[in-house]
Image (tube, rainbow, N blue to C red; front, side, top):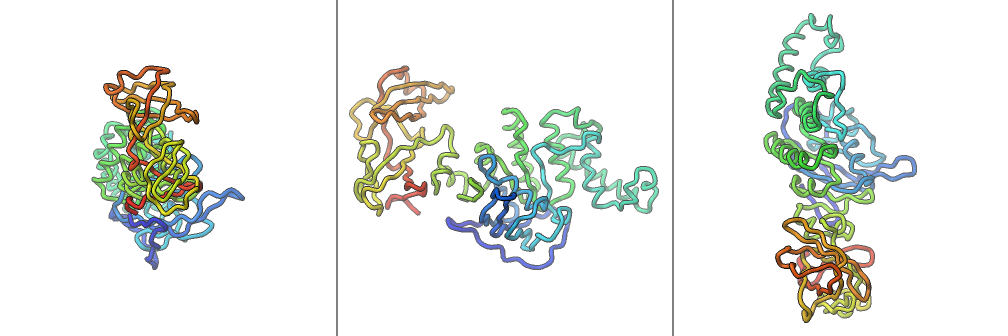
Length: 404
């Protein structure tokens, strides 16, 4: 993916798009996409370029416009403004079937009365058979129909073999588990050899253990096919573990694009910092006390910036960046333990900081916190370099020592 902090490069391709079932990955470009439903905005100023063969996840809360964006790319919705390019060619004027993309829906959208084999063969029959040839009895005697059906059957069986669902081809969706239905939905998309896969929260209906397994399988499938994947999710675990690049969306806009590590470690907007990370980042009120320091709830912390002294800021510190220590550390907060959560390898300590009565979470090793008890007094410290500072509007303020 090609991206900058402020905007994304504009698609430069022009010309007439030719639908080809080549299976070769292509670039995907969105330029200044806007969409509203009546007076309700759904998408604003969406600009993004995706390189051919990339796996990109779109991450954001429900209602931020993720699914609408996929539907616009697929041709199922029409944008109010802006352009969609696939392989460098504009496709806004093309119907869904001619865009050479395949979409996997959250509900899987399988035909309940058809077998797995028939569900997977539907897109190939619609593409390769004439209307007359699709008639059940008469069509089979049409010229060339048997050869086309043989090729369709071979393609369906090859795809079923890749997805390990060969034994399910004669079953109907109601006889399948959630994970099996998900594989069938992916298989129905695969048989077309699309150049772009669009996946709209395909794992949301699965249990936690199966979601982990299917994350791996979809990532493996991407590596095997080499196609361009655009994957929508509200689950940060899926977004960070599967995508080469993450598009963080909120309030109908793209807030940031970057690698999973960059999105987590270096958020540009406080909304991104709050949304990504579990448990959520701790946010403290602060004031710029000088060009060299911040006052964070009474603690003076080193932070060199060009921000005017006296300006209020918001300071974020990840739970794992904080430590519980004995009294006497210079950069510290005093508090009382209000709740403890044991997670096996981690201990989450919910601590009320005084005198502001601010609740924070500290993530630590249980062995290092054996002395921690409910309602016991504690001291919290952290490295000032781990602070993420945002202005009153939520935009990142960088220390002069931090890279841009």
